[in-house]
Length: 318
Image 1 (cartoon, helix red, strand yellow):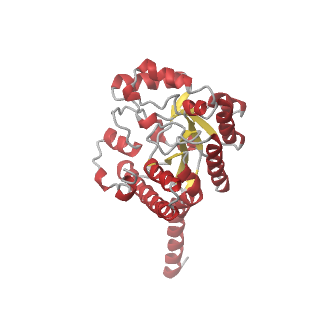
Image 2: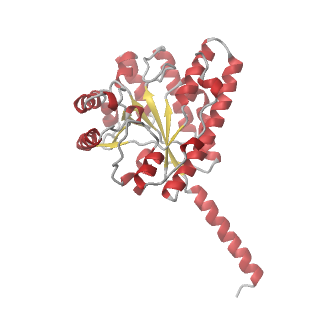
Image 3: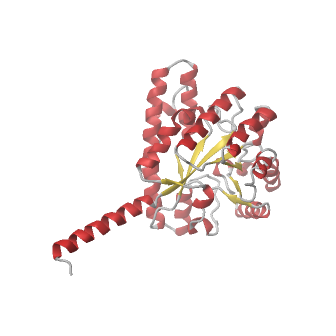
């Protein structure tokens, strides 16, 4: 029989192991929108860059993902593929599948569902399959497909919400939710202006502010999940295929590593029961899923606690 002091020591070890195990259970799936390139213009924005720069941006992002063994999914705007030149756009996307990454549908035009008819949005989904779907099938990964709603608009009326959900299911799609976002498009819009004007010091300051804000958002949405669900569900991080993310991808991923997250695929993240529950929430807005879950469960949350990007960045260039 163990003495009292030895019992305490064993309990301490067990408690430490439990805490460490809990930390290791935190998972995140990384998703990257607006392939083949997200410009610094307001979304959806044209491909206001050269295909060569778009290729460089994607190579940098993919290199960072490979280094950290992150099974990411990129979501394709077919119109952007055309604007890059179909041959060059396909070449950019083929980098993803050739390196073992998945592609998903972000529709043809990136138009919000709020501004489209049911029939028009369904057509946009089908047109969005032109390039990414053959690449996925050629890579042997076309059996499980995901769609990311532009602006996260999943239906502003019950009729739209249910009709599009039915259409997606019929075509073999699952919705790609997102639970963490960092408003990277606001930072990127300022960042590309700074680089364009040769303001290296300002660009460096922005990168630091961007990573700090992203760190705060990771913590905020983890706490939001725990408040609403009673646990932290597998997170799904929303990023964009931008110059800024290409330049900081390694440091950005290291934020999750430092917070004891393990990277998983989107499909693995969605095995959690919370993603399998029926999605009944419709709204004209595009909130993260933690806020949607709160509404569905009648949990009151204080969204004002979520920080906004620094004013100097949001106002840059205006």
